[in-house]
Image (cartoon, rainbow, N blue to C red; front, side, top):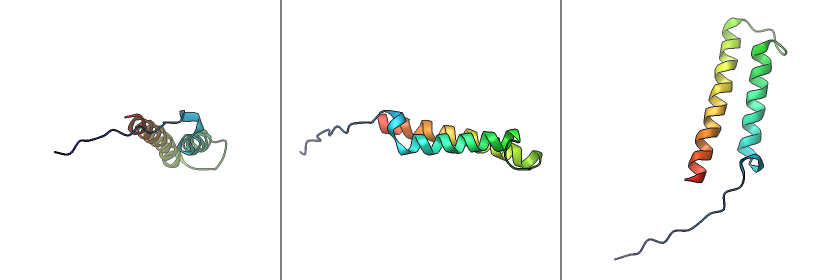
Length: 69
């Protein structure tokens, strides 16, 4: 029988990861676009920007959850 050994990998704090900073950039740009600060999009594009912001936040949350499991 083979024994399964656990290897521990150090998990860095979230704010020190590239995925955190990329997610922040995506959320900030999406929020700025959706609020009309940048770009001249219509209602549909503003809604798409809000959806992109939510998806970036969810993607980061899921990735951190998997990293800590």
